[in-house]
Image (cartoon, rainbow over all chains, first blue to last red; front, top):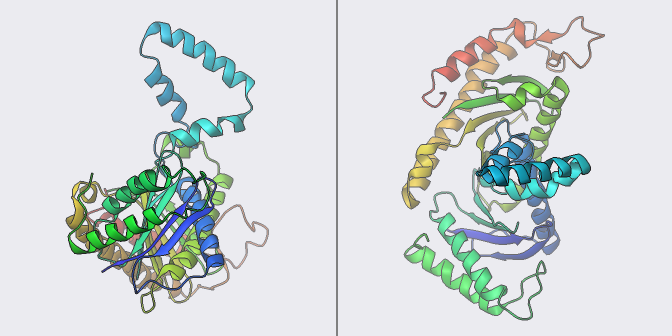
Length: 194
Length: 179
Protein backbone atom coordinates (compact mmCIF):
# COMPACT_ATOMS: atom_id res chain seq x y z
CA UNK A 1 0.00 0.00 0.00
CA UNK A 2 1.50 3.28 -1.03
CA UNK A 3 1.98 5.66 -3.91
CA UNK A 4 4.88 5.11 -6.28
CA UNK A 5 5.19 7.73 -9.01
CA UNK A 6 3.53 10.79 -10.41
CA UNK A 7 4.12 11.93 -13.96
CA UNK A 8 2.47 14.56 -16.11
CA UNK A 9 2.40 14.44 -19.90
CA UNK A 10 1.48 17.50 -21.95
CA UNK A 11 -0.91 17.41 -24.86
CA UNK A 12 1.81 16.60 -27.41
CA UNK A 13 3.29 13.69 -25.45
CA UNK A 14 6.19 15.48 -23.78
CA UNK A 15 6.92 14.73 -20.17
CA UNK A 16 6.59 17.88 -18.04
CA UNK A 17 6.98 16.40 -14.57
CA UNK A 18 8.07 13.13 -13.01
CA UNK A 19 8.80 12.31 -9.42
CA UNK A 20 8.71 9.39 -7.06
CA UNK A 21 6.32 9.53 -4.13
CA UNK A 22 7.42 6.63 -2.00
CA UNK A 23 10.51 4.71 -0.85
CA UNK A 24 9.49 1.57 -2.75
CA UNK A 25 9.25 3.34 -6.13
CA UNK A 26 11.70 1.84 -8.66
CA UNK A 27 14.59 4.07 -9.75
CA UNK A 28 14.05 5.23 -13.33
CA UNK A 29 16.50 7.38 -15.29
CA UNK A 30 15.48 10.64 -16.99
CA UNK A 31 15.77 9.25 -20.52
CA UNK A 32 13.69 6.26 -19.52
CA UNK A 33 11.09 8.64 -18.07
CA UNK A 34 10.84 10.59 -21.31
CA UNK A 35 10.31 7.32 -23.13
CA UNK A 36 7.64 6.18 -20.67
CA UNK A 37 5.85 9.51 -21.02
CA UNK A 38 5.62 9.46 -24.78
CA UNK A 39 4.86 5.72 -24.91
CA UNK A 40 2.00 6.24 -22.52
CA UNK A 41 0.74 9.16 -24.58
CA UNK A 42 0.56 7.07 -27.75
CA UNK A 43 -0.84 3.99 -26.04
CA UNK A 44 -3.57 6.18 -24.58
CA UNK A 45 -4.69 6.99 -28.11
CA UNK A 46 -4.21 3.43 -29.39
CA UNK A 47 -6.26 1.94 -26.55
CA UNK A 48 -9.26 3.99 -27.60
CA UNK A 49 -8.80 2.98 -31.26
CA UNK A 50 -8.28 -0.73 -30.63
CA UNK A 51 -11.32 -1.20 -28.46
CA UNK A 52 -14.31 -2.91 -30.14
CA UNK A 53 -16.62 -0.47 -28.35
CA UNK A 54 -16.13 3.26 -28.45
CA UNK A 55 -17.66 6.10 -26.56
CA UNK A 56 -20.13 8.14 -28.58
CA UNK A 57 -17.98 11.08 -29.62
CA UNK A 58 -14.86 9.08 -30.42
CA UNK A 59 -13.78 10.02 -33.91
CA UNK A 60 -14.02 6.50 -35.31
CA UNK A 61 -17.38 5.64 -33.81
CA UNK A 62 -19.18 7.28 -36.72
CA UNK A 63 -21.75 8.70 -34.34
CA UNK A 64 -20.24 11.97 -33.24
CA UNK A 65 -21.60 13.93 -36.17
CA UNK A 66 -25.14 12.75 -35.46
CA UNK A 67 -25.02 13.39 -31.73
CA UNK A 68 -23.38 16.79 -32.10
CA UNK A 69 -25.80 17.95 -34.75
CA UNK A 70 -28.75 16.70 -32.71
CA UNK A 71 -27.53 18.52 -29.63
CA UNK A 72 -27.03 21.83 -31.38
CA UNK A 73 -30.16 21.79 -33.50
CA UNK A 74 -32.86 22.30 -30.92
CA UNK A 75 -34.67 25.13 -32.67
CA UNK A 76 -35.71 25.20 -36.29
CA UNK A 77 -33.91 28.43 -37.01
CA UNK A 78 -30.64 27.22 -35.54
CA UNK A 79 -31.14 23.94 -37.37
CA UNK A 80 -31.40 25.59 -40.77
CA UNK A 81 -28.38 27.80 -40.14
CA UNK A 82 -26.22 25.06 -38.69
CA UNK A 83 -27.12 22.48 -41.30
CA UNK A 84 -26.36 24.79 -44.21
CA UNK A 85 -23.12 25.86 -42.51
CA UNK A 86 -22.11 22.26 -41.72
CA UNK A 87 -22.89 20.99 -45.18
CA UNK A 88 -20.69 23.71 -46.66
CA UNK A 89 -17.88 22.89 -44.26
CA UNK A 90 -18.20 19.12 -44.74
CA UNK A 91 -18.03 19.64 -48.47
CA UNK A 92 -15.02 21.92 -48.47
CA UNK A 93 -12.77 20.25 -45.93
CA UNK A 94 -10.75 17.10 -46.60
CA UNK A 95 -11.47 14.32 -44.07
CA UNK A 96 -8.38 14.85 -41.91
CA UNK A 97 -9.65 18.30 -40.96
CA UNK A 98 -12.26 16.67 -38.76
CA UNK A 99 -9.45 15.68 -36.41
CA UNK A 100 -9.67 18.74 -34.22
CA UNK A 101 -13.41 18.45 -33.75
CA UNK A 102 -13.27 14.80 -32.82
CA UNK A 103 -10.34 15.01 -30.41
CA UNK A 104 -12.32 17.52 -28.38
CA UNK A 105 -15.42 15.36 -28.51
CA UNK A 106 -13.58 12.12 -27.73
CA UNK A 107 -11.43 13.44 -24.94
CA UNK A 108 -12.92 11.07 -22.38
CA UNK A 109 -11.90 7.90 -24.21
CA UNK A 110 -8.47 6.38 -23.68
CA UNK A 111 -6.70 4.64 -20.82
CA UNK A 112 -8.26 5.33 -17.44
CA UNK A 113 -6.66 2.62 -15.38
CA UNK A 114 -4.13 -0.16 -15.82
CA UNK A 115 -3.75 -3.00 -13.36
CA UNK A 116 -0.61 -5.06 -13.27
CA UNK A 117 0.63 -7.74 -10.90
CA UNK A 118 2.59 -5.29 -8.74
CA UNK A 119 1.37 -1.86 -9.78
CA UNK A 120 -1.83 0.03 -10.43
CA UNK A 121 -1.80 3.05 -12.72
CA UNK A 122 -4.49 5.67 -12.88
CA UNK A 123 -4.71 8.41 -15.51
CA UNK A 124 -6.68 11.65 -15.52
CA UNK A 125 -6.89 13.46 -18.83
CA UNK A 126 -8.05 17.04 -18.63
CA UNK A 127 -10.12 18.84 -21.26
CA UNK A 128 -6.94 20.57 -22.44
CA UNK A 129 -5.24 17.23 -23.10
CA UNK A 130 -2.80 17.13 -20.19
CA UNK A 131 -2.50 13.70 -18.63
CA UNK A 132 -1.87 13.29 -14.92
CA UNK A 133 -0.68 9.75 -14.21
CA UNK A 134 -0.32 8.27 -10.76
CA UNK A 135 1.03 4.81 -10.00
CA UNK A 136 0.58 3.00 -6.71
CA UNK A 137 0.87 -0.42 -5.16
CA UNK A 138 -2.22 -2.63 -5.62
CA UNK A 139 -4.81 -2.04 -2.92
CA UNK A 140 -4.13 1.68 -2.57
CA UNK A 141 -7.40 3.58 -2.58
CA UNK A 142 -8.41 7.10 -3.48
CA UNK A 143 -6.17 7.46 -6.53
CA UNK A 144 -8.86 9.36 -8.40
CA UNK A 145 -9.41 11.89 -5.63
CA UNK A 146 -5.64 12.47 -5.34
CA UNK A 147 -5.35 12.99 -9.10
CA UNK A 148 -8.12 15.57 -9.06
CA UNK A 149 -6.41 17.37 -6.19
CA UNK A 150 -3.13 17.34 -8.12
CA UNK A 151 -4.94 18.93 -11.06
CA UNK A 152 -6.16 21.67 -8.72
CA UNK A 153 -2.62 22.14 -7.38
CA UNK A 154 -1.27 22.30 -10.93
CA UNK A 155 -3.72 25.07 -11.80
CA UNK A 156 -3.04 26.89 -8.53
CA UNK A 157 0.73 26.57 -8.28
CA UNK A 158 2.11 25.99 -11.78
CA UNK A 159 -0.32 27.82 -14.05
CA UNK A 160 -0.46 30.89 -11.83
CA UNK A 161 3.34 31.09 -11.67
CA UNK A 162 4.21 34.11 -13.86
CA UNK A 163 7.42 32.43 -15.02
CA UNK A 164 5.79 29.15 -16.04
CA UNK A 165 5.45 28.57 -19.77
CA UNK A 166 2.69 26.28 -20.98
CA UNK A 167 3.71 22.79 -22.15
CA UNK A 168 7.16 23.21 -20.57
CA UNK A 169 8.62 21.20 -17.67
CA UNK A 170 7.27 22.25 -14.28
CA UNK A 171 9.98 23.56 -11.96
CA UNK A 172 7.97 25.08 -9.17
CA UNK A 173 8.80 24.62 -5.50
CA UNK A 174 5.30 25.52 -4.39
CA UNK A 175 3.85 22.72 -6.52
CA UNK A 176 6.42 20.18 -5.31
CA UNK A 177 5.71 20.97 -1.65
CA UNK A 178 1.97 20.98 -2.16
CA UNK A 179 2.11 17.54 -3.81
CA UNK A 180 4.22 16.23 -0.92
CA UNK A 181 1.65 17.51 1.58
CA UNK A 182 -1.18 16.02 -0.43
CA UNK A 183 0.46 12.59 -0.53
CA UNK A 184 1.12 12.71 3.23
CA UNK A 185 -2.50 13.63 3.78
CA UNK A 186 -3.69 10.84 1.47
CA UNK A 187 -1.54 8.27 3.25
CA UNK A 188 -2.71 9.28 6.73
CA UNK A 189 -6.37 10.10 6.42
CA UNK A 190 -7.44 10.05 2.81
CA UNK A 191 -8.45 12.88 0.54
CA UNK A 192 -12.09 13.85 0.28
CA UNK A 193 -13.25 13.60 -3.35
CA UNK A 194 -14.36 16.94 -4.78
CA UNK B 1 -21.28 -6.61 -17.92
CA UNK B 2 -21.00 -7.72 -21.48
CA UNK B 3 -18.25 -9.65 -23.16
CA UNK B 4 -17.45 -8.02 -26.49
CA UNK B 5 -14.62 -10.05 -27.98
CA UNK B 6 -11.87 -12.52 -27.24
CA UNK B 7 -8.55 -12.76 -29.05
CA UNK B 8 -5.73 -15.25 -28.60
CA UNK B 9 -2.26 -14.29 -29.85
CA UNK B 10 0.91 -16.33 -30.05
CA UNK B 11 4.36 -15.19 -28.97
CA UNK B 12 5.04 -13.41 -32.27
CA UNK B 13 1.72 -11.60 -32.45
CA UNK B 14 -0.06 -13.92 -34.85
CA UNK B 15 -3.75 -14.31 -34.15
CA UNK B 16 -4.56 -17.89 -33.23
CA UNK B 17 -8.20 -17.41 -32.40
CA UNK B 18 -10.63 -14.52 -32.50
CA UNK B 19 -14.29 -14.22 -31.82
CA UNK B 20 -16.75 -11.37 -31.39
CA UNK B 21 -19.79 -11.70 -29.16
CA UNK B 22 -21.40 -8.35 -29.87
CA UNK B 23 -21.64 -6.38 -33.06
CA UNK B 24 -22.30 -2.69 -33.41
CA UNK B 25 -23.30 -0.69 -36.44
CA UNK B 26 -19.73 0.42 -36.92
CA UNK B 27 -18.34 -3.13 -36.84
CA UNK B 28 -20.74 -4.24 -39.55
CA UNK B 29 -19.17 -1.68 -41.86
CA UNK B 30 -15.62 -2.93 -41.22
CA UNK B 31 -14.17 -5.47 -43.62
CA UNK B 32 -11.88 -8.36 -42.72
CA UNK B 33 -8.75 -6.35 -43.41
CA UNK B 34 -9.71 -3.57 -41.00
CA UNK B 35 -10.54 -6.13 -38.33
CA UNK B 36 -7.15 -7.77 -38.74
CA UNK B 37 -5.46 -4.35 -38.55
CA UNK B 38 -7.30 -3.73 -35.31
CA UNK B 39 -6.03 -7.02 -33.89
CA UNK B 40 -2.47 -6.02 -34.73
CA UNK B 41 -3.09 -2.78 -32.86
CA UNK B 42 -4.31 -4.73 -29.83
CA UNK B 43 -1.28 -7.00 -29.80
CA UNK B 44 1.08 -4.06 -30.20
CA UNK B 45 -0.61 -2.28 -27.36
CA UNK B 46 -0.40 -5.30 -25.06
CA UNK B 47 3.26 -5.76 -25.97
CA UNK B 48 4.28 -2.18 -25.18
CA UNK B 49 2.04 -1.89 -22.14
CA UNK B 50 3.74 -4.89 -20.62
CA UNK B 51 7.11 -3.19 -21.07
CA UNK B 52 5.71 -0.01 -19.53
CA UNK B 53 4.11 -1.78 -16.57
CA UNK B 54 7.27 -3.82 -16.10
CA UNK B 55 9.42 -0.73 -15.74
CA UNK B 56 6.98 0.95 -13.33
CA UNK B 57 6.57 -2.10 -11.08
CA UNK B 58 8.57 -2.00 -7.85
CA UNK B 59 11.10 -4.73 -7.21
CA UNK B 60 9.59 -8.03 -6.20
CA UNK B 61 6.20 -7.40 -7.80
CA UNK B 62 5.06 -9.46 -10.75
CA UNK B 63 5.37 -7.47 -13.98
CA UNK B 64 2.29 -9.07 -15.55
CA UNK B 65 -0.36 -6.88 -17.15
CA UNK B 66 -3.86 -7.71 -15.93
CA UNK B 67 -6.35 -5.18 -17.20
CA UNK B 68 -6.58 -1.93 -19.12
CA UNK B 69 -9.64 0.19 -18.54
CA UNK B 70 -10.60 2.79 -21.13
CA UNK B 71 -13.57 5.10 -21.29
CA UNK B 72 -15.70 2.62 -23.22
CA UNK B 73 -14.57 -0.83 -22.09
CA UNK B 74 -12.03 -2.92 -20.24
CA UNK B 75 -9.43 -5.21 -21.75
CA UNK B 76 -8.47 -8.15 -19.55
CA UNK B 77 -5.23 -9.85 -20.42
CA UNK B 78 -3.54 -13.09 -19.46
CA UNK B 79 -0.10 -14.07 -20.63
CA UNK B 80 1.37 -17.54 -20.26
CA UNK B 81 5.04 -18.36 -19.74
CA UNK B 82 5.27 -19.47 -23.37
CA UNK B 83 4.12 -16.06 -24.54
CA UNK B 84 0.56 -16.91 -25.51
CA UNK B 85 -1.72 -13.96 -24.79
CA UNK B 86 -5.46 -14.10 -24.20
CA UNK B 87 -7.25 -10.76 -24.49
CA UNK B 88 -10.86 -10.37 -23.41
CA UNK B 89 -12.86 -7.20 -24.01
CA UNK B 90 -15.73 -6.47 -21.63
CA UNK B 91 -17.80 -3.48 -20.58
CA UNK B 92 -16.73 -1.38 -17.65
CA UNK B 93 -18.49 -2.85 -14.67
CA UNK B 94 -21.20 -0.37 -13.70
CA UNK B 95 -21.36 -1.81 -10.18
CA UNK B 96 -17.73 -0.93 -9.59
CA UNK B 97 -18.24 2.61 -10.84
CA UNK B 98 -21.04 3.35 -8.40
CA UNK B 99 -19.12 2.16 -5.36
CA UNK B 100 -17.39 5.08 -3.63
CA UNK B 101 -13.69 5.33 -2.75
CA UNK B 102 -12.15 2.52 -0.77
CA UNK B 103 -14.90 0.01 -1.43
CA UNK B 104 -14.52 0.48 -5.17
CA UNK B 105 -10.84 -0.44 -4.98
CA UNK B 106 -11.63 -3.53 -2.93
CA UNK B 107 -14.44 -4.61 -5.23
CA UNK B 108 -12.32 -4.05 -8.29
CA UNK B 109 -9.46 -6.21 -7.08
CA UNK B 110 -11.75 -9.16 -6.34
CA UNK B 111 -13.40 -8.91 -9.74
CA UNK B 112 -10.01 -8.67 -11.45
CA UNK B 113 -8.96 -11.87 -9.73
CA UNK B 114 -12.04 -13.55 -11.02
CA UNK B 115 -11.26 -12.39 -14.55
CA UNK B 116 -7.69 -13.60 -14.19
CA UNK B 117 -8.96 -16.93 -12.91
CA UNK B 118 -11.39 -17.18 -15.79
CA UNK B 119 -8.67 -16.44 -18.36
CA UNK B 120 -6.34 -18.92 -16.68
CA UNK B 121 -9.11 -21.52 -16.80
CA UNK B 122 -9.67 -20.80 -20.49
CA UNK B 123 -5.99 -21.43 -21.12
CA UNK B 124 -5.36 -24.46 -18.94
CA UNK B 125 -8.67 -26.27 -19.19
CA UNK B 126 -9.95 -25.35 -22.64
CA UNK B 127 -7.02 -24.28 -24.85
CA UNK B 128 -4.62 -26.94 -23.63
CA UNK B 129 -7.29 -29.66 -23.52
CA UNK B 130 -8.84 -28.98 -26.92
CA UNK B 131 -6.10 -27.47 -29.04
CA UNK B 132 -2.68 -28.42 -27.68
CA UNK B 133 -3.72 -32.02 -27.01
CA UNK B 134 -5.35 -32.42 -30.37
CA UNK B 135 -3.49 -35.13 -32.34
CA UNK B 136 -3.48 -32.83 -35.37
CA UNK B 137 -1.93 -29.89 -33.48
CA UNK B 138 1.21 -28.41 -34.95
CA UNK B 139 2.36 -25.28 -33.08
CA UNK B 140 3.65 -23.27 -36.03
CA UNK B 141 0.98 -24.26 -38.46
CA UNK B 142 -2.35 -22.98 -37.24
CA UNK B 143 -4.82 -21.72 -39.81
CA UNK B 144 -6.65 -18.64 -38.58
CA UNK B 145 -7.26 -15.99 -41.11
CA UNK B 146 -8.83 -17.03 -44.39
CA UNK B 147 -6.99 -14.03 -45.86
CA UNK B 148 -3.46 -15.23 -45.25
CA UNK B 149 -1.84 -18.24 -46.88
CA UNK B 150 -4.68 -19.63 -48.97
CA UNK B 151 -2.28 -21.24 -51.44
CA UNK B 152 -0.64 -23.87 -49.21
CA UNK B 153 -3.79 -24.93 -47.46
CA UNK B 154 -2.89 -28.59 -47.25
CA UNK B 155 -1.72 -29.90 -43.90
CA UNK B 156 -2.82 -26.86 -41.95
CA UNK B 157 -4.32 -27.26 -38.51
CA UNK B 158 -7.65 -25.50 -38.15
CA UNK B 159 -8.97 -24.73 -34.66
CA UNK B 160 -12.47 -25.07 -36.05
CA UNK B 161 -11.83 -28.81 -36.30
CA UNK B 162 -11.58 -29.03 -32.49
CA UNK B 163 -14.36 -28.33 -30.02
CA UNK B 164 -12.44 -25.36 -28.53
CA UNK B 165 -15.00 -22.81 -29.68
CA UNK B 166 -17.95 -24.82 -28.36
CA UNK B 167 -16.36 -25.26 -24.95
CA UNK B 168 -15.24 -21.62 -24.81
CA UNK B 169 -18.74 -20.38 -25.60
CA UNK B 170 -20.24 -22.69 -22.99
CA UNK B 171 -17.75 -21.53 -20.35
CA UNK B 172 -18.07 -17.81 -21.10
CA UNK B 173 -21.85 -17.86 -21.20
CA UNK B 174 -21.92 -19.63 -17.83
CA UNK B 175 -20.09 -16.65 -16.27
CA UNK B 176 -22.18 -14.13 -14.30
CA UNK B 177 -20.56 -11.23 -16.21
CA UNK B 178 -21.22 -12.56 -19.69
CA UNK B 179 -24.46 -10.63 -20.31
